[in-house]
Length: 226
Image (tube, rainbow, N blue to C red):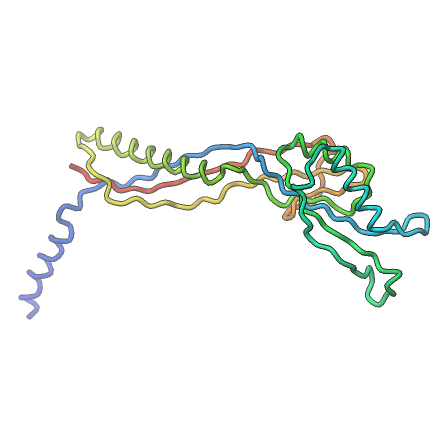
């Protein structure tokens, strides 16, 4: 039986490899883009000053004025969290410090700088940048994948040409998802604490600006060798 099976196995292997002459290459492409969607979290919290409580209503009114003075449309502002929270468990309601949080979408580092300038007199609890994004992100990502595939094709053609062979039709294309690099900015002003959600510490006060978002794409492809 073993003698009979060996020729059959050899035939099957020959059939499996018949016509499987191909080259496999990987192409990559990258691009840096300026973020035009800057999501910022602003937290307002009551506090005591000269033994008097600064109310949430006053903080809210001061914040809205700063927003107007910066020329930012309130339509870009969303309520993120609101309610009463106790500074320490067990305190009476009159001693509780209420807080409220907003999410604001800005369009540039310049607009953020102007907003922070107007926000300076308002004693907000914290300002945090939660996300950097670009409005054409999906479109740019697809275009980058096309460039990576073209790079893979050009690499295959060059390699095959060096050994006197020609490239045929594509046999397989695999897209590797690469997460974009998300840069964050850190800064501190007199009354505003600013930091990214996943980082700690502060940068100098004049460090207003962002590094660009780095997009990357990687494509692996197999092409037939004629």
